Length: 264
Image (tube, rainbow, N blue to C red):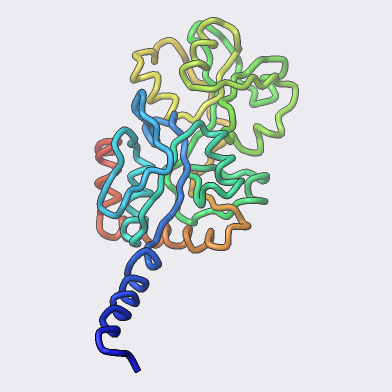
């Protein structure tokens, strides 16, 4: 039996432990900084473990995929701890357990062995080669690129067909801007890219007429991924799927698409 005056204190402790930090839903998310218009960080901004509670956003980082992820998890009651880094580092954060979720990520056979994927995608990437406008390359598929040097953005997925392609010198490049600069200087023969993102960059920089595209050779929808060994990974992905379906049902996803891409 409680002594006089002790019960209220015990009750307060129980309320705090039930509704306070113990019940908070927190998700650690890692993503990349150079993927406009899906994920993009403002110059001079650093985001590492930034807390984004339901109903809030983060200054200096934006993009269509970020809006979809944020809105979906917020509907499910999550506070997001966001880290934005170069892609290779974001991937490492997931593999070492510093992040629960990585996005947006395409599928290939190697990744499917170690990652679980959301059922709902964030976007789609078409894979193709950019060349200088004054170059003539007769497209005969990836086999026709044998002996050429093709710039590849470090850490990006271009599908199993590209991984299986042989006889091509695959030169790693850090940023999209660096890739096109090397292409202009004729230091590489082509630059493999994700069509919508690379086109967005060229349009923004008023460089569209300087390059042309070879036909797309493959594509991949992109998703959220969690490490298979993360005991909560499947739950996080399931909750994202449920949140995104709510965005679709309420018409919010349509509004996000119009915000970033206009009426299509």
